[in-house]
Image (cartoon, rainbow, N blue to C red; front, side, top):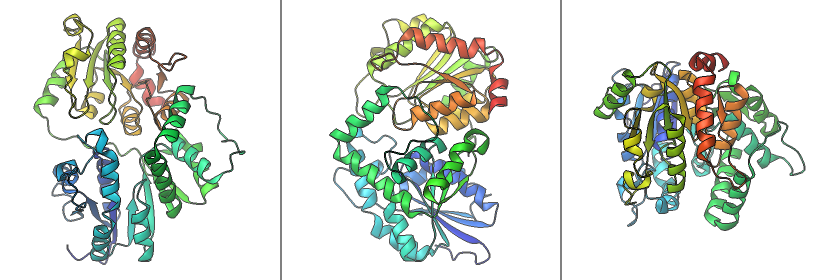
Length: 420
């Protein structure tokens, strides 16, 4: 590793092993580089390979990619040292391997000798290493401020103290969370790990902006006594066109302005067959143009045609594009033909939708997403598809909200931009 520049502040970054985490960490690294910081971005080789193209000549002298090698495990070969494409049953194994890499990370820390460590939501062991070396540990969280403030409230406040901002969340989500806590010791350990990681840091950075989440940002230091700073949305850079990208852009180029609905539920949530069917019928009933990204878990032998309603692809051929696996989300949202975004409300997706001025049709699935949907509604950049009393989505409600957001809101991109 190169000797650090003594005239600048050196930062060692350690994100969680997900593409959805390492990319925003790289974006923050670039932002810091413009303010006299040198960055060492540490992750597994397969994760670093996914961002190497983004570390162009402009940044190569300021951002160094540092490989973290996880302990060798028979069930976890190196190509599984990332959440991207990881079979769901190996997630706990990956988290355990990551935590067990602390001796390797300590060697990296001692070699780099950073002035600051920036770490993610679930690495108390990394913060401990920094503090044992008298180095400040700063936590950079990719969740919304509403979720951060609520989780900190639970962490620091007695159960008799109410959260100061009234929230209405469908009972489906609270029951789902309780059931998972009761049935999964591993999930309880995750909560404890995240809690310990949050308590160690002296400063919290949040991927958000004050105009959207001011009251929630301000509440975090009130209850935790930690300086809390929003760093902006950190929307990813556009890369060169790919063959897949060209297909979607050509589809959009043929459609009228704000006439296409983009449908995506993120890279790590997989819809059930029943959910796929209801969304398909909802899109069909909406009678609007759409691009829909459908993903299946690694190793699941499900064909796209089998998951969709019989004859669906033929019936929507002229107005729908269904893509299996991946689509260039930022390019799609930034296209003038895109008029709505059916989203699971992952916070990164919400940040992108706000930056590109695309209103959200919110269909949250779990964890922080229902709270992110609250922000979408509070700020006025979208509407939520309500679940029925059993917690299920139905096609009529999906179609109704899609049409309302795309058609009734009128020039929704400008309205959404104005509200955000």
